[in-house]
Image 1 (tube, rainbow, N blue to C red):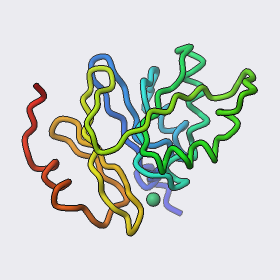
Image 2 (cartoon, rainbow, N blue to C red):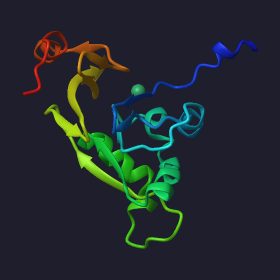
Image 3 (cartoon, helix red, strand yellow):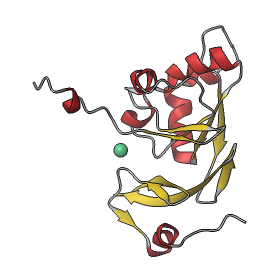
Length: 165
Ligand SMILES: [Zn+2]
């Protein structure tokens, strides 16, 4: 095993920040460590790419942000990912609420653009074999993970310079 710090590659996740909004894409099993390492004090929302374990497993740790911000964490996921989240973290969605549970608010998204705080988000539908995966475009930056196919129409969303008005 290498002792080079740079070899400690954590699972894929990115942080997108504007003046007043902070978003993270996917909550990997390394989520807690990634947030601590990046010194993230405030988090407004989590966007999910797809329901594989290594992309949702760290979700429980949004509790730390719930605790500080006294509000639910806004989650944005397609319906497939939403189902997986409800299944994996069923205890967070049960009627019996008890202290210490993650406080989650699910927002269902598809390929339509939406806005979180002051950050416009354009989802891009890509495919990993037969699984739909969402990529996300922010301004002229696009994040896509776990994909091996993108349809022509969706590819157009990557090209065009987009005006927001
Ligand atoms: Zn995957």
